[in-house]
Image (cartoon, rainbow, N blue to C red; front, side):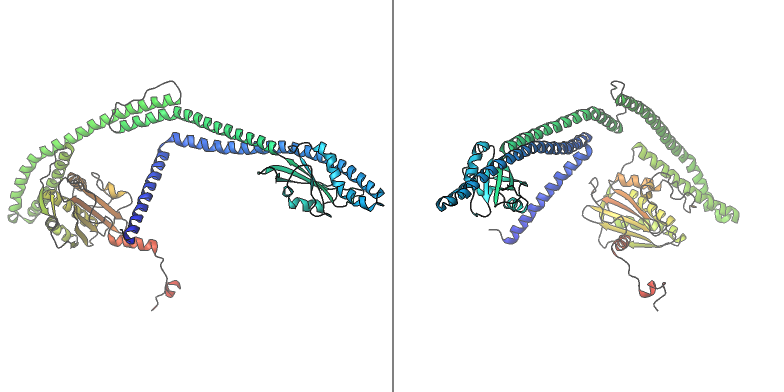
Amino acid sequence: MPTPKKRRRTLSQVMRGIRRRARRAVGGVRRVWRRSLQLRVVTSTMVISIVVVAVLGVFLMQSISTTILGARDRAARSEAQADRKAVLVSLNQHDGDASKQSADPGQGAGRGEDNPLAALASLAGRAGPAVRYSVVIRNENLPGEFYATTNIDETSIPQKLREDVLRKPADEDSTQYWNLRYKDRPQTVPGLVIGTRLDTYGTGLDDGYEIYHLIPLEEEEKNLTSVRQMLILVGAALVLLLAAISSLVTRQVVTPVRLARQAAERLASGHLDERLKVRGEDDLARLAASFNEMATTLALKIHQLEELSHVQRQFVSDVSHELRTPLTTVRMAADLLYDAREDFDPMAARSAELMQNQLNRFESMLADLLEISRYDAGAAELDVEPVDVRDVVLRAVADSEALAERHSTRFDLRLPGEPCMAEMDSRRVERILRNLLFNAIEHGEGRDIVVSVGADRDAVAVAVRDHGVGLKPGEENMVFDRFWRADPSRARTIGGTGLGLAISREDAMLHGGWLQAWGAHGEGSQFRLSLPRAAGAPLRGSPLPLVPPEVEMRRTWRGHMTPVLSPAAADGGRDAD
């Protein structure tokens, strides 16, 4: 039997699964909504149609109800007025007979009590069956007495209406819609109740008689229900018809647009011969014709650029290879002069040294051009072997020490205490690190450079952090473009072709890794190289953060903390001491 803790854990897992599926379903609906123009148009049309039909339906229903009930109300008031006259005649006649026979005490009382019954008898023929209306006579001086032409229940007369009748002058109507109840029917019937007090002597005074007409509105209610159902059916049919029309019209517009989108996607994927069919002479046909013209022009331009790029790559490759032979001869002569410079006069010795330095720079530039031409030709290959990343970092730092000393820069190495083994081409990775270190020295403005190494189960990473000018927004990817410089007006202190970071990125991609940059103005910059431990394995993450932790911490603190000024700082910024 599972424990309460396990049961709670299982319930929480079920709830998380439900929430996850609900989010997935909502996300799917949202994607469909964003991607389907036809769905949005049809849905918007249906919503607007529903609102318009509902407003018109309510207006029509109110007008029809007012017309039907108004006609029934006017007819009921007319009949009630005629009935009141008949009742008054009957009551006055019986009251006169009762006064003549007042000497006979045994008959007077009975006559007086039969007055309402006699009045109702005179109305029996006028009121007709109960489906037309019922008449009730009451007397406030005789509580409990209730005289009706039908088997209407006493609760059919609302108490609020009776209080209103007793408060108003005689012969002034009061009306109220109410549910009528009959003694032989279990269900109530909607109806109209009209009540007034009777002026039995024609003097404006009364002797407590009230007359109520209860008109059932069952037929009117059925008619209104039928009209309401008909309006709902017609409105629903109208909404569906409008939705179908909008879907048809939208399809006529969206289908060519969808075909154009698919053609554009195939064109973007490299199918330069993709074209649209032109039907008719309308706007969509002209759009298809314009698309075909654009595709033709684009294909021609791409072909020209490919030829130009091929010619350029071939030129760079040919020139680079052709320069190696004379460079080798010049290098041999320069080495001889450089080795014998001590026998020369100072001017000739200095010239030999300058020639040696410039030859080294020229060889480096030529090597970069040859490396780029290999990548362009797809001829670059890896010489993979298991190596310790720490050793590669130390060799790259050692090669950069002399340059760092000339720029008064110091390296801060942060290496793990255990080996960080990975399968890589150590020559290419060392070249990447040298380029990153040279770049940090160039732009670090003499401040310390932090070199960090990290590793996890699947990947290794090296981060080179400088505290120089940093990068402007959007330059994080531009730094890896060929021949790109952050500030063209800035004097270079380290010679090069501008291909170092571009070659470094190609080397990283050849390993299946990442070379990324971060920078902020005044915060410096950081370059991070991430490589998989096993050659050919996919890289899913990096063991080192791209943004330096201290920068991220400052941003978090500024975003979530409000600085509190001391009294001295608040008072003009004077020091508290």
